[in-house]
Image (tube, rainbow, N blue to C red; front, side):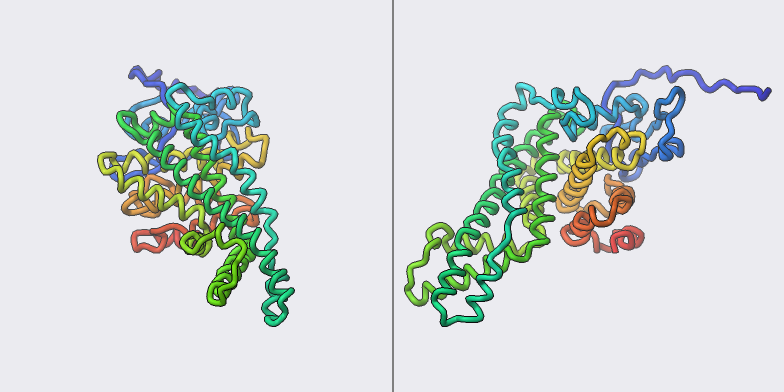
Length: 394
């Protein structure tokens, strides 16, 4: 019988009980990426069916504090922060309720989020006036066809106006959440622990944003309808013809809407600009407060998605889509705000790991998210981006 060598005794050093997660990468001296061991990657647990311990970065967070080894219970503390639904654990929904200090911001943001699903439903059902517009263009002398096309386009432009105005409300909500989740004296990790209901709302905004832009990118009718509306409105003004709908979308608003819909991912562009503006307007706030909040959320999503031990607990496939969208959303915001972006070696986001997680999904389900990383990030094509990362996104 082989001799069994006893392992080292318990570490006598005191440990603070904090969340076992943090940014995956950093500069010199930063904690190495959280990489599940071989047993965890293969979905096997450790002793007694429990996941094996992984010490980094579970052992050290942003501020270098020690913590307990990574554990399943710690990960579900993270899960409830990101996804306050009953699909993973009955306790998650209750735990995501706002505390007294969160309520003011939470209630303001909640008013906006309540309208989000209706916006997505309207966008999903948007069919456009392509047939009427083609008929009007092919028969310019036929007044009935001109009136029919105009009558079809005006209510659609009303919808487009509603979408644009919602983007402005969403921007204001995001700025309120950023202010709450990055304020001193707490670190980003402490904020995400203390204000879990606000963190969940932040994730929901990103989820909505990526869903909106995925739908918009696959619907060319939106820009075609709005272009026809503007051309026709301009002709009517030249001919002094009163135009129904002109009062609803004046020239200044039409210009802003035109810039908004010209973007491939208009909602994401709005939030990226809002985050950049938030950082530039709050110069007394260390930029790390914002970037560390974003990188931490990216790491949480990545770990939940790449570790079979944790992902197997998802009983709803929509949770996977939620985490993927949130991960991509915070990467893009980080890349716009951080001076060297998300793709540099010093980035606190494990970009190779995040891209691999995306590529491990069914291709049809993530192509829009991969395109968002390809075309809406700021630093992907910088010289500091490794060839391997560029190759992974080709």
